[in-house]
Image 1 (cartoon, rainbow, N blue to C red):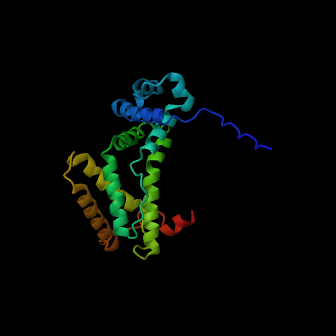
Image 2 (image 1 turned 45 degrees about the vertical axis):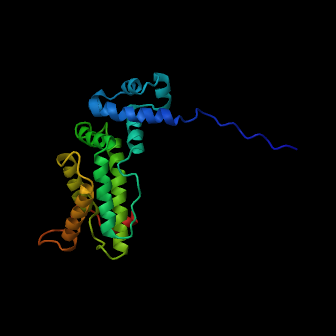
Image 3 (image 1 turned 120 degrees about the vertical axis):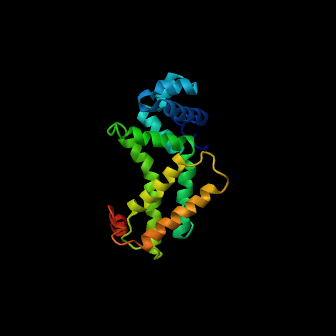
Length: 219
């Protein structure tokens, strides 16, 4: 008695090459046109993909943009070095390098567009923030468990200080830094941040505008 034939897979197989071309086109078109000029048809023309093939895979331009940004995330690697300082340094380094890429620049443009299209781009900004918030939250949780940070440390404030400095440096610093410059800057930012959190100036509250780590762990 022979084994029954394996059931045939249904649906259209994924075309990795097509997705790569489309995602490249998404970044190019959005960088040139922003949200107002970003359409599935414009992406299809740039990627040389037929309208029918494009619309079979993505129902809306929101879906396509979200998938493209998630596929080309500025934070592709998990961070766990075993120590708070090196974790935060790696976070700053990844963010800094990511902001210099086409996907990083597009993510910044999406964030700006969301200011005037909050309902339309709510899902996109949530996607852009998710990986950074989760990375920072995980880093802080581990640091609290190791006794490197107080349990009331604000994840939001920590993330704002690190990402704000990194973003400013990426936007207004040298467009082509010398080898090692970004790494040195990431180390410097973390030194400053940890110094402020561990030895706060009078009136500085490291729990500012955030739930405590203990509350976040239970949510």
